Image 1 (cartoon, rainbow, N blue to C red):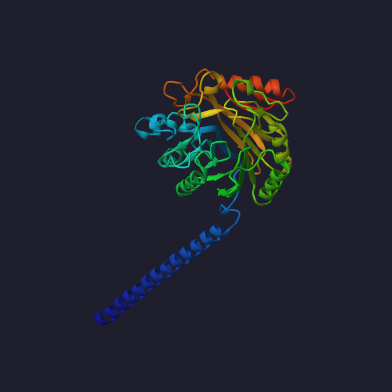
Image 2: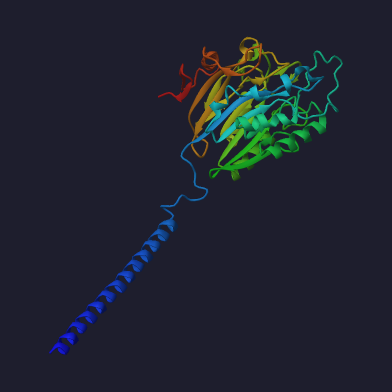
Length: 385
């Protein structure tokens, strides 16, 4: 009888053990199956073009920061016109925060980046001859501020001849800053966050792309537009000084030189496919205009000019433009951050008096009374209803 009971107990134990093992194995299979399903679902999500951010997808809004002339001191005729200790760090220290977050940060590099005074243009009287050459190490201040696009098309890029131009190009290449405007490098193309930008810069000076040759300029713009989403054009043109603040809509001269018709030029460039026109050269700020839903800044003045440039009165105030466009360059809105350069230390800083905003408001009303745009006292530029 006892033996019979032992057999029954043993059978029960074996049965229980079998059921337990079967349950554990089945559970493992279920977990493994669930993991496999989860991995499959995740892979499907990653491969789903609607749920994955495509490489090269366009942003909704592009932000482009633009300023005028940059000349951080010059090595010619000696070190007298360089910042103390050859330190350019103050050139943008008080204003670079206004560049943050922009896709493009643009400026006009007014002079060469060179460490050699050889090949400087000939001057009968160095005291009144302006030769602009910044030490190559000053490129570090441009990089630190966030500049990624520069115009070389101006009357000082050739101040140190071919040697100076080559030094400038090599220095900017090593620093990773895009540039254009010389006959050796007329255009630049770059891609940021899936948007391709084309850039060309124009001036009326030897060695630059001629702002007065409109048919040739149109051909360049049309070619860029075929390959790029947004085409940015800068131009160093128009008269100079306090008496040259207005856009005349006619050809302008300075010291007997034909400096181009900036009104005709900008409109023809937009007709050809340009999306943003950025002017400099007059050393004062000019009006703004919107033509065919594209933004034009006719002159952005002296932005960071440490020496040998007049910064008295209207020559010392300048805007930082932040222009918002669609991924195809259509104007959305813009903002002016007002700056000024005190004559005693030449460090650009925020102008709490908002003087350049008032200047742009008045000039735009005078020069373009037909414009349906509003420039608010806080610096915002919007299309009027």
